[in-house]
Image (cartoon, helix red, strand yellow):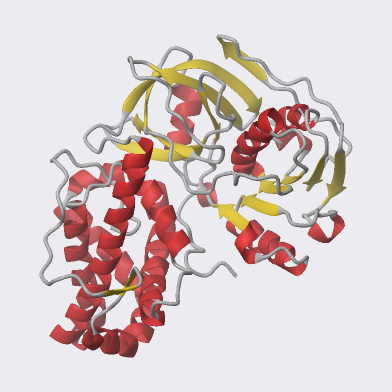
Length: 449
């Protein structure tokens, strides 16, 4: 299901449908003429109540299938972000269908959802469960307005969405070698590096006979842990080292709890419990926001722990394309909170044309802290200042010289992404040359403006 996460055990099979697939035009899924008219007439009211619908959906599906509780991010359930993201995705996909064959704006959102589903082991048959309870939630919220005609039209929207995701997930699984029957593989922690007071890096190698998987700079893995009380949860972490190192590395920030609530369950478990030699369940690397080939200049813009995929991209470029110009922009609370800064400068020193612009809310004049490490072969960077410009306050892209023809990559909190993208567009960077990664539910889905 869109924004559903879970791993089943039965053999893969296509979900049952109650009608033949709708026709396509040039590869674009199309609603039947009758359903298109109904969806067009009711899209406004569904959009108005979309968050209410998804809020009703999750309790329904959890009551009927409590085994799925451990497979959804319960932190995002508590904040309401997951239901907002699901609502946005459904409304955006309906708009995509109504726009007709010329519309391609939803394709990046669909790819993003599909990559996450592959990393979590979502199964085709689970879409049937989700569709049943989602349409029931529509009826619960909208009441008598949901006639049989309205129900069937939105059921068609759902199944076009579901079949598009299933097809894309199949392609991704084949490409990355993901086995739906065995998504989780055991990986051993070989190093634990303290990057800041809130951030720790973990080096990982396969604990079994499987070789290290290939991956692209910018991709992530899912990590599943068993929590106190019997719960099991999975989270996604960007790979914070470039391919070719002989191990994978994730860099984990302890997620603070909102409004005095407990800190993030998985990040706290990794920080407090996981030691060198421990085994973690890890998925194959996935993710569609990856470093483009070619020699175009790069602009890497990050905030907080959003620096992690940028480190992998920078490292890959420094090793294979040292002549490629790179501008890095990073925002953080202070130099002490800036994870992997010294590593960024060390890799930047290998580039012919590199500049780092940092914005700190406080402590601009202080040197950044140095990381500490334990484990086999773990080191922390020595730091440096080559090519760095420090600033106070919030990022101002108008103060950053941008190379012509650049490709930009963004990662950080959603308000930061919106501001950064707007700044790049204002500076003349085309929208198709701007890619973004967001940690957690994509509340920007379908409308990155």
